[in-house]
Picture (cartoon, rainbow, N blue to C red):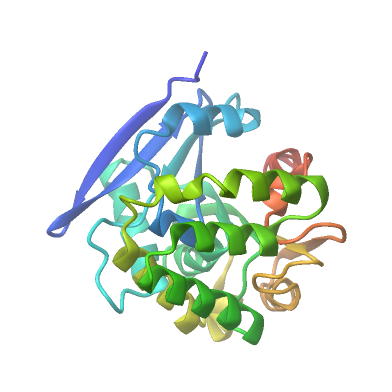
Length: 268
């Protein structure tokens, strides 16, 4: 029923990293989440993720990796990419299709650049090739809230910037209760992840990406804007661009056709 969902852990250097897997397909798909991973790991979430991404489960064995635990200060998006390349080696995943969302898209860029043979097709969703003013404002706000251990504030500000309409109203109501869930949040880890977004700059290397790539942006994106998606598509040689006009940064959750659109691209 839950597509052979599995929770796992990988030892890396002097620490480890959590991952989940699910699905019964013969192909591999790796999903890399955004900076929210700094506060909420994928540990123990194999079943809910298998339900969220069930559209992929017939065709793929899906893997979702958290960043390493005890993430050091100054750890870059390229360092995070190299971790996932090493995870693939340990799990004997020769190659995979990739979906990188937000910061996950930044990491996916470097995987495609540094290990092109491991990337079949690539989807970069609501992400950027380098930092910009909109992203800096968002990230610096969250970093300051994290320093104050304001979990509810981070979640509420993220919701305000990510969703629209009735979906946003629903998220606002949920945020009223989120203060109860921030007690065990790993704020230092989140800050280190967030700071890596500010230093991300793969622009000059995008031409080295060989895999067919779908870039998905959102015209109303208040977290990092839409121009980064346009720049990615312009600089990645074999790429397509799709912009959602009516959504913001959380399009991958709010747009009902998002997962199917991704799957259609990967299968064509």
